[in-house]
Image (cartoon, rainbow, N blue to C red; front, side, top):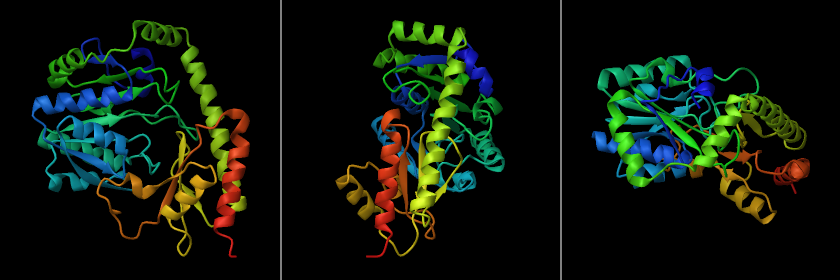
Length: 319
């Protein structure tokens, strides 16, 4: 595991690297360790994964919304939130699809150093960047203030429930204790198979292949929507397995489109469902759809994208 992580700059040793059973377990362990360390209030990106917020609440932490914009999490807001820790997705903000800017990275680390706060870096798909090399991990800049959480769920398969976290020295004991209590280790066979996959270089080859496949999928989605529903705008970087599609004013709203899409056999989400605060942090923000392009099988992907394009074209064509 450590061999691959070094490519992103993550600083890991046998003492602070813990392997666990999937991304959800890794985040749960990080949150439980923080709670045991005295953390009470956790800042979460707004918008962010509802499941992640459920995991945090389930460990006894209170959550507070940290607004995000086109440059990622607005780290300058942290001092007035009163949070003890913050969880962020700096490589590819979920679901906005943007990268945390260098200035925001500096502000985030400055907050942690000045307050004693802890940053949880959720690197859920950081390997899957298509327009350039993946950005370095935030943890590499200050291992003493960042918990790094990674997973194979996006890069390999969700069924391979292997995740990992790299914690700062002050949390090593709490992390080890939590793992023992909840028995969160993946199977030995899965760990051995993944280790072999990495050591032989097959994992690197697989990642390169997946980048090509997912880039083609994203490019097809962008081209299809540009042709059939040009009123819509795809924003965010070319990365991961989802795209954020901004909706123009004066047309159908998020809830209407999501409901009608479901009736047409299409699964899309509205951005409002990812809100930690329940309301947009910027009143000027456009409504948007979150569209995953990683799930449809290869043989049916073109058909699925064409159906989505036809649906959106009909939705924005005057009767």
